[in-house]
Image 1 (cartoon, helix red, strand yellow):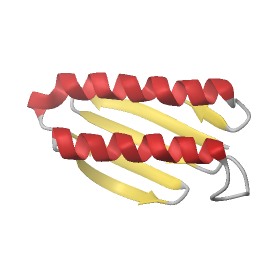
Image 2: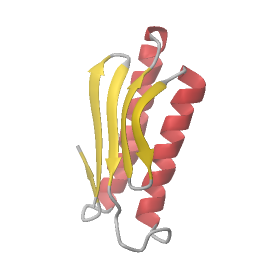
Image 3: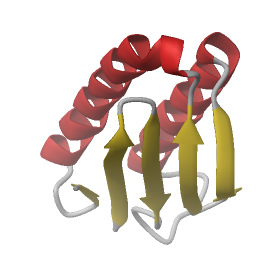
Image 4: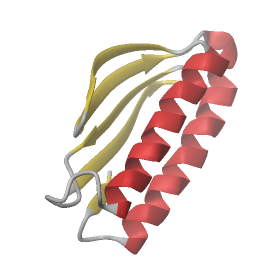
Length: 102
């Protein structure tokens, strides 16, 4: 099971976690690959475009980060978070036994 959590702290800070695997067949599972691709795109996009700073862990099967963007990017950050939440939601909706979004 992959657990995904977006927990907004303020308009420019977020706790974000993606923990677990969708199966034991690592590297060959489409659900895990989809979640991984969305996670990496989300993090790289906000780092490169919104100057996000990260604190925490990011490794295979465990992403547990505190994210902060400069205040002037708060609105953009909120919109991007909502877009990616929607993407994770669709994966969780399609594969409820493998992905849970909090």
